[in-house]
Image (cartoon, rainbow, N blue to C red; front, side, top):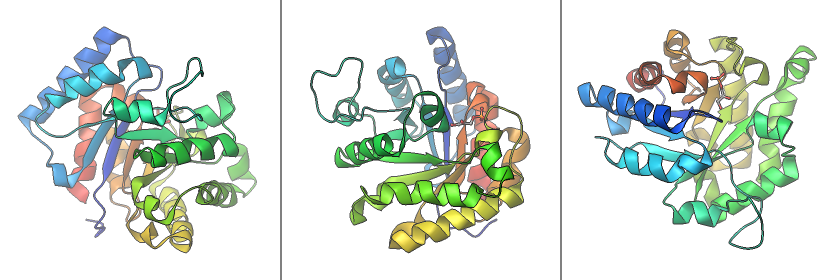
Length: 263
Ligand code: 13P
């Protein structure tokens, strides 16, 4: 037991996966595992983040689970409301579809799609103002880690959003630390390294907001059943943002169970 009073979060980020039939089978299998042995709602928040086109179907499918499972959007528009913005989905449209949370600042968005800090701030602001919860992703590259800049980079990413978050909105933010070199590579940060960065993030958050001590900080980057128990035992690791392993019902279930059991 870590002694943390923060309820853990285990969120599956499906990224640009899977095809409809596989998504449906994955959810059925996951719900079946929960039917066999449920994970108490107060022991872990569980959610999945499907592709945008599947959000409504997944939301409906998850209503039939025997516990709450959040449907999380992977991204949102930098533009708010409605209007002539081809291809975009605003915070208000997500909210209107009963979506409660959205990922912002994932390294794949930052690196591949040009989401620089100003765009990310617009997205964070829109999400919070529309009443969505934000899972805000931060993390350094291998080059930044090897040159000793990891902490500086991550804390800067935390400070970046402080310009747009109102004091009362911090409680709607969950932070996810995902070192880029650990994403999809099979390499996980050691629990000690991850814990050290999480403690720094908590310190940084606490300098910005009194909520900092109670905010959940998730780890992401090759989380799997084999390393989940050790990661979950770290006091400042309050959950996981899971990519590849969330596409397998059994693995995702075991990760959720690992976090639910240790907190
Ligand atoms: P993997 O678990 O596949 O490394 O992905 C992590 C991630 O990017 C979750 O957002």
